[in-house]
Structures are given as structure tokens and as C-alpha cells.
Amino acid sequence: MINLQLTNDFLTEEEIEKLKILFKTDDIEEFNLALKNVAFAALTEYKEMLLGKGLPTRADEIKQHRLLHLIKHYFQGKIPTEAEVSSMFQLTETESRALIRNVRTRFRYQLESEILNTLQQTIVSAEFNNDTYHVVIQSDNVLEELNRLVSTNAPLLDPISKVRGSARKYQISEDTYELLSNSLGVNQEVAVTVQEDE
Image: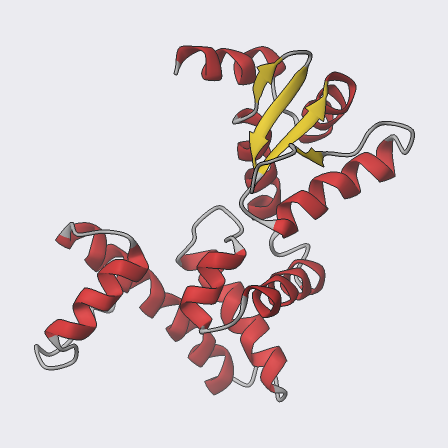
């Protein structure tokens, strides 16, 4: 095992406070873990460069590789939202949406478990409400991926649609919810029970 230690002057107090906001934590242990995960993602990127493993040359490819490593090591098990990527990469939401889509497409097999986990978490969080399921979806990429599953497996079913008057709340018909649950291996009874317990 290799341990890396940062000197006390590596980060100023102001930089630490900004990173705490980015990492969404005031807890020192959570902060250190987040920093460690980001460092591990960066070291993975440098390892590939130093060992000559298909180093990208274009700026957009470098961003794609960087996001891939952050998904693997920092976001741990899920695909980030456009807002999260915008905060880390200093991009607009439109640019972040395109970056996530490109990473999803280019590294689909490497990110198979992260994509599946993100979609499963989204479906499990849905609440049954007046003959439809309501769910908050913070990422256009997640919405796109779920609707792709619907159009591929059952093109006659209703796609997921936005609830009128809401920013990020969507509705899923019962048939579409059943299809998505089956496709993603989500136990429907568990999904509903989780919401009823809250």
C-alpha cells in the first residue's frame, strides 16, 4: 500500500471551505474521504498517461476520461447529475449534459454497473400517486436512459413525462413502471414499500 500525505500548505483555508461546499460536507472524515477519492481518480488518469495506455489527445476526450475516473472513484456507484458535473468541471449544464452523454456512450460497458445502479435507485424512489408513479429525476441523462429502455423494449407504452408545474418531477404510468422494474431487476413491492415507510 502506498500512502500519500499532503502538506499543510497544499490547501488554503479558503480553498478547503470551497471544497467542502463542492463535496457537500462539513464533516472532516467525509471531506478527507472525498479528497482521497478525487486524488485516486487523478492518479488513475496519470497512471494511464505514464504507462501509455491510450492517452487521449483532444480536450473533450481528456474531459471524458477524467469524468470516467471520477465516476469510478468519487461518485462511487452512480452517474452524477449535470449540476454535479458543472460544479466540478466549471461547465454550463448544457455542456455537462453533453459530456455525461458522451461518457455514457463511449464507456457504456465500463460503466454498466454504475448506469444500472443509478436507474435502479431512480425507479425505487418512485411513489405511487393516483394511478401513476411520481419520481424526481435530477438528471436529463437518467431520464433519457430510462426512456430509451421504454422505447427499445415496449415502444407502444407511454414514455416518462414531466408533471406539469414542476421543475424535476416526472410521472410514470403503471405499465411503464412495471416494464422498467422488470428490465432493471427492481422488486416492485419493495419499491412501493420503501416509499410508504418514509
